[in-house]
Each structure stands twice: as C-alpha cells, then as structure tokens.
Image 1: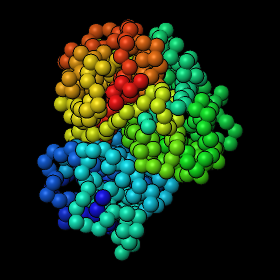
Image 2: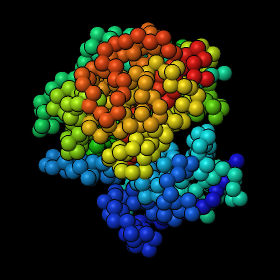
Image 3: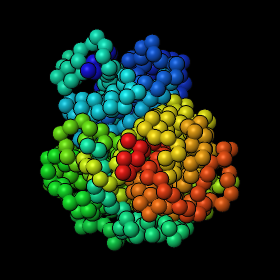
Image 4: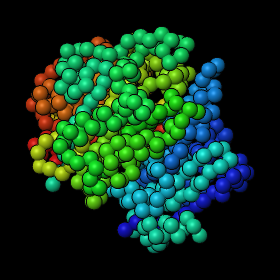
Amino acid sequence: MLTIKRFAAIPNGADLTGLYRNMAGDYPKFFKMDTACKLGFLLAEQLADEARFVPREDRAVLMFSTHGCLCNDRHYEETVQDFPSPSLFVYTLPNIITGEIAIRNKYEGETSAYVLDRFDPERFCSLIEQAFQDVVTRSAVCGWVECRADDDFTAFAFLVERGGNGKEFNAETIYGTVNQ
Amino acid sequence: MRIVCKGRSILTPLGTTVQENFDAVCRGDSALRRYEGMFGVKEPFVASLMDRKEWTREGHTFFDSLVIETARRAVEDAGIDPASPRTAFVLSTIKGNIELIGKQDVTLAASARTLTGAFGNPNPALVVSNACISGLAALLQGHRILCGGGFDHVVVVGCEVQSRFIVTGFQSLKALSEAPCKPFDVHRDGLNLGEAAAAVVLGFGEDGWELVDGAVRNDANHISGPSRTGEGSYKALRYVLRHISAGELAFVNVHGTSTLYNDEMESIAIDRAGLIGVPVNALKGVFGHTMGAAGILESILSMEAVDAGLVLPTRGFSELGVSRPVLVSAETRKTDKKAFIKLLSGFGGVNGALLFGKGGAGC
C-alpha cells in the first residue's frame, strides 16, 4: 500500500523568489530556472525529509501537467530569430523539472514527466501506483505543476511512500488533500 | 503470461515498413543530408528529414499525421481493435507540434486527444515526455499499464518532427555536427537531428518478442550534461541485468548520439555494468537523433536484427574514441543470442534501459 507522507502546495500567483528566500536561500541555480522548475523546486523543498542530500536510488520524482514547459517555450521562441538562447532552450523539455529536483536533493531513482489532458485524481493515482512496479522505488515526489503563465499556475505535490503511517494514497485522499 | 510486441510500424525517410528500414540499415544506407536555409535556420545543418507533403493529411498537422499513420499501421499489424475501451494509447514525443507555437494549441495533451480521437478510442492518451529517453520510457509505461490491469493492449507511439525551434536550440548548445555523426568514434563531434515515427502494440502472450523489464534512473548531476561516472545508465543497466547474464545478450543498442560526453558516459556505464564483452551498436548514423521516436524505432530494428541472427552495423564509426574498450560493432556480425538491451539517456540527467528477449531468453 502507498501512503501520503507529506503534501505541499503553492498558491497561484505566489512570489516565488520570496518563497525561495524563506525556504532555501542557498541555491543560486534557482534563478536560472524557468517558472515550472522553480515551482517544482519549491514543492520539493517543502516535502524534503531526512532522506535528502545523500545519493539514493529508492526515491523517484514523477511530475505531471497539461502545459508542460510551454510557458518557457514561448520565451525561447522569442529569442530564436536573433540569438537563440541556450540557457532558455534547456528548459524547453517537460522533464527538466524532475532533473532539477533530482540534482538538488540527490534523488537518483526514476525521474519521469507525463502530460495529461487535465488533473484527474484517479489517473494521477494509478500512474503513480504503476511507477512503484519498479521494485527499487520506495518513495516518490509526485507533483502536478501546471504553469499556464509565469504568474498563473497550479502547483502541488505529494511525498508518497510504500507502507508508512500516513493516509492511504488513493483518488479520494488525493482529492480531499488537494481541495482542503 | 508475458508482455509481448504484437504489432510494429516504422516511418522514416529510408522506408515506410519495418522491413524496408531494416534492409536499409543492413545495406549501410543513411538518410542524413545537409540542409541550407531549411525551416528558416541561418546556419546549415545535417539531418534526416521526411517529406512533409507526402505525409501531411488534410485537417492534421505534419506531426499529428505521422503519429496517426504509424499507429494505424501498428494496430493493423497487430490485428487489434483500437477503439476498444481495453486498448490504451501512450504517446512519446518531446516537442510535438512546437513548430506551430503561437499559431495553434501546441500542447502535447492536444496531440494526445487527436491521436485517440482518430481511432475513436474512449481513453485519454498518456503522453510520456522524458527528453531523449521518451520512447523507451513510453514502452516501459505500456508494460506497466498492462501489469496494472484493466487493459488488453497498449499502443505505444513515438514521433518527432524537426523545426526551427529545435534545430536552433541544439545549435545554440553547440551540440550538432556539421557532418554525418560518428557514434563512439575518435573523431565524433556532435549529433544530427532526425524525423521519424514508430509504434509498437504491446499485449499479453507467450510467443514473439517479450518486453521483459526496464528502469529509468537519474544521474542527479547536471541538467544538460551526462554524468562523468555513467551513474544513471549504470543503475538502469544493473536493474535489468537482474534478469539475465551478459553472456546471453546479443548486443546493447546504445544511444550513441556522437557527442563527446554522451558516448564516453555510455562506455563507462557499460563497463561498470560488466557488459564490456557484449557487442554494442548505435543507429544515429542512419536516422539521426529522432528524439521521441528513437527508443521505439531503435528497439524495433534491434528485434529484427536478432530475428535475422545479426548485430547491426554502427554507421559512422571507424576508430574507437571512448576511454573503455567497448565492442562497437562497426560491420554487421552474426549472433545466436536471443536477447538485447536498449539503452538511452537524455537532458534532465535521465537514463533508461529496457530488456527484450525471445523464446524465454532473459525471463
């Protein structure tokens, strides 16, 4: 059985730099990131437990969205005509958010990025359960980071683990937690 | 019951069937050529591109047309009902319709809707967009969906089309070679981009090619550079090697993008995983880097090779240019082994390995 160890959410339109200064403050790479990655980074900071910073293969990072990195894609496209920006281009991949979280925390397990039509707790839950078919995976940072624009987003994430004492991770508890 | 490949399809500039593409690889053909002014890109580049006029269907974009057509062919090959609620679709792509940004809805979610809509399938398609390992990750996802229950078949479709957006991006990173790429070669100096579409229908069965297992692992090191120790690739290899010994593998079909760092990293991972005695080959010199299609395209051609008792040649390779003595297969060679590993890695520090076997090999 999978259970919820922690949950984190960032309010739409929140001041991400302010959150970063309160939460981390010691990771200047944050300022290079696109908005989706900043959101993922800040969610993972809130979820972080004793298990971070030591390389570990048993923690996965699974991120979901509808828009992927389209917000940053628009910024990159604006540079293409004159001087294509390599630093923007590397953020035009929907999975970079998982890589940023893995690098920061030394999570060496699976990292996967998925695009769904909309947030559906049933589907979100079943895809995460399927990821735990990997027998090495013991816990996962599982997030929905929907970045429609730099100041318009929906961002929340669960730290899910095998066993554990938290609430069971299922569609009902996901729905209840997200909407509390 | 095993999870096996029931239908397959490949569309590339070299052929529109699996057989045509396999024959082209065996002959040593390549679709890589030099383009000047293509997509409005200022600098010339070498790539493997499809004929847009030939493949674009009315009412659909070039990308969506290729996705639907390759899925249709794989579904026909498998003889399954694509509209059945017990059939799921997984789409693998990195950038989808990005060339149309600002002109229409270019979300990957929109392409997923178009795909299932074309077949009247009631399940929303899942998009796996995991950088250059997307195709491999999508096949693994298909395996997991079937293991999870509720479905009889999963149609896994991979596709990438090129555009100014992607080409200028790789140029800005100085990742492209000005010549056809040279995987694992001492003179390698970058990759070439490619367009392709490929699909596999996975289902339950006893016969045919089994997708045994797979794993995805992160280097947790750098977002755009591979690990110097091959960490993620090594760990992904180690995971699938729980099922098989090195001596049972016909080959490892590697990523082999022909960038300095990728090929070096793969050689380290292969050595660390105890696979230094296993033949290694790469297909990027034939098709270029087809991104979201690569994992599926290269897996299908590897199955064909084992069926023919062959290790395919590595076009572009002549002299080993990595630090570990990997057995790069320069020319076609014979094999009597019945299993292989597909290896990929990509931006975001992501790496993946899949194990395929036939006749119980590797199970």
